[in-house]
Image (cartoon, rainbow, N blue to C red; front, top):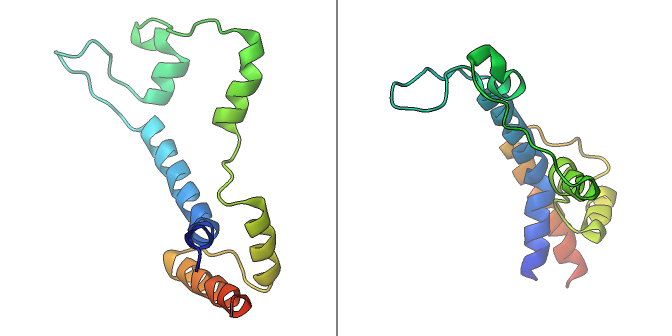
Length: 125
């Protein structure tokens, strides 16, 4: 079987779970407490508060102006959800898995992956 099919199948099945975990970690990281260090030049606090309200921590606001016409590209590069697999593969996988619920754990994602690969192998006889 062609390796890019396996790559897209893995991304299709496991990608949403990984994205959800990354979002959870990001939320945790941005709200975790950092204690002050006598050797650090940065104040203690939580990253979220340090970023949005540096004045509370007697710190400086390091935001700077950006070129406005770059803002649209930055939003595309940073803010949009990544495309986990090719659109053609996604359409195919959506069609053959319409009776499946979206996986909520690795075991369900594995089951879905093997099902998709089995369907593809039937077409590649």
